[in-house]
Length: 165
Image 1 (cartoon, helix red, strand yellow):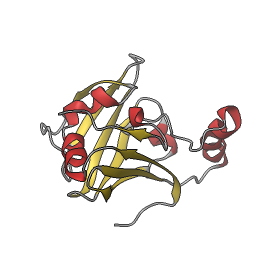
Image 2 (cartoon, rainbow, N blue to C red):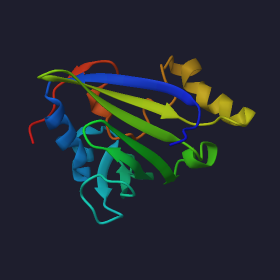
Image 3 (cartoon, rainbow, N blue to C red):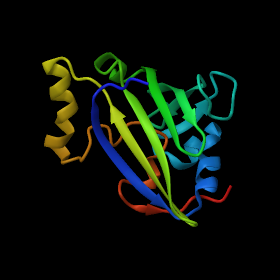
Image 4 (cartoon, rainbow, N blue to C red):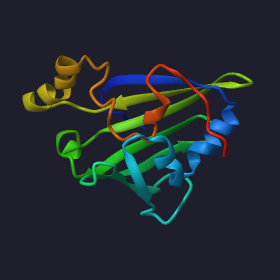
């Protein structure tokens, strides 16, 4: 699979075995349970579990915005590649090739590292400015730290526990 240019990454260590972390993250209806900006999820593809080609719509807690995410590659217990084909915030207009690769790595029997790698092209000066603006305003480590990736509450570089299924 060909990726756009790599832009940023975050990682979190979850105090749970790889199998438990993987299984919890496969249920798309649970996204609102752990993502701080997602109110609910509609299953566009009619499938509750992640899989290649499965799409879902996230309704954000602001009550105004939505985004559609689509899994384009799923390698069990290893990684998921998710695209953002549409949204109401203008992200897809600025970054039409935006992808998130989520990698799962067991650290030991009871800990799993989850890494979120962001890929996208910044072709216009306006896009480069807007993508870099959060760095200037709030000192964010990444421009889309607050974007809906379905993993917001786990934190950036912090330790977390996998919720009980």
